[in-house]
Amino acid sequence: MKSHVLVVEDDVPITEILLYNLDAAGFRATHAADGVQALRALDDEKPDLLILDWMLPKLSGIDVCRTVRRTAALAHLPVIMLTAKGEEGDRICGLNAGADDYVVKPFSPNELIARIHAVLRRAGSVTKGKQILVGDLTMNLQTRNVERDGRKIALGPTEFRLLHMLMEHPGTVFSRNQLLERVWGRDIHVETRTVDVHIRRLRKTLNAGDQTDAIRTVRSVGYALATDRI
Image 1: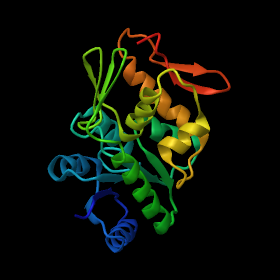
Image 2: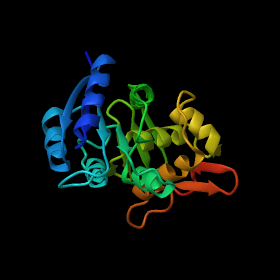
Image 3: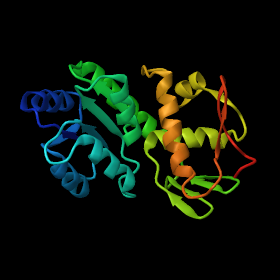
């Protein structure tokens, strides 16, 4: 079965390029022209991946991405931001909103297709059929449900894989480069700064309310699951 990609883009020529190249690459591609249409389409169509422009009519791509991550039924949907906003601060804002990858216009269709394949592989490569328990954290790898002390936690695909990595090796300190290689893979270029952004998102979600910080930062080294705090 073809993977379904929803393209949210208001520029007609760019939309035509995207739909043509996605179809040629073997995807089923559909389109929404603004943020409100995008949310309706997500509710109706249940795509496998979302390509999302930032500057959209009615509702911005950033707001759409945040809504996706706050919605339990959509929280695991992979999102690639495709936008002309290419400054470092813009990239960080997009990743903080919940994007799994960030591609700047003008873009190479071949590179975008490669990134789509990489994101879909990462989203679907978690071993199924078992549960991980570490302290008050529970992760079900079949249903992709995560709980902390009974509280359900909605995570995006990248945050889920980061937590999976940390929970598989509780207390082990991983460098940013190690996390990049094991979570993002060797087949895609991602800056080490991206790890910090996703760790910050994961930390904020895990530590809601007055719960202790579940992730330990080891200065100049990396990150670990803080087994003494959970």
